[in-house]
Image: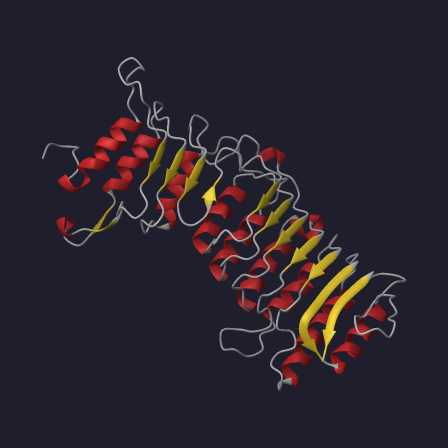
Length: 351
């Protein structure tokens, strides 16, 4: 085997990469490789030929081809190759280079619209099957200076790690963009827009994951810019031990009490605030924490959705007291309609 040549098992990949990065003119090579699918091809892994050590030479060969000025690939799929966070970041970064032809990239489940993702103001990613690894890629994109004002991540599989990745990226101030001299800087980073709407409804967040997300929002510019936050259909008041966990509700209070908080709509439907049917203490603790946030916050809330939480009469009375503190009065309807000042409507269900 000559120096610089891959082992026999990578011979086909070596030839593919050579074709993708070929500098030959059209008269010599009339067909250019535009789409490459390498899903589940063991680009990395533990190799018996390397004494049980990790072998990433296949990935290195692919990265070299992608980085070539002659590479014309527009669509690339490397999902299912057990890529590490660093591997995925390397593939994403080389695909985002200004001279890259790549338009779509799939590293895990999410097919990243590489050509437009940094310039889109709205990302509708509901139901894309995204997991925590995809959220890390999204976080990397957000940190590079995406111009998002609307981000919908509902109906995915994000847990604690995914929430932390998104939170860390959103905590980056748009008034302090990445230095233009940095290799990871985006030419549009100085134009980063404020985030107005964010949905992580129907994911896999428990109290710890939701708390991480909310703390990130409270620490960054989204505390002022965010108008709608939807965390419905996540277990916000329950921890890993399946008991009451108040970390998410405490973090929600921090967000709602942040200076300049502009939140007008908060959706917390089916978030387990009512606890189990026989556990009144759970429900009382969760609603007490929410009421404390409502009392302490000066956010201009217009709508609060608490449907599907199975709240009881005692919780209804506690909410009524908290809302009256905000200058709201309630009529007698079960849906807690508020029509005079402050909140325009609360949607709730009571048992």
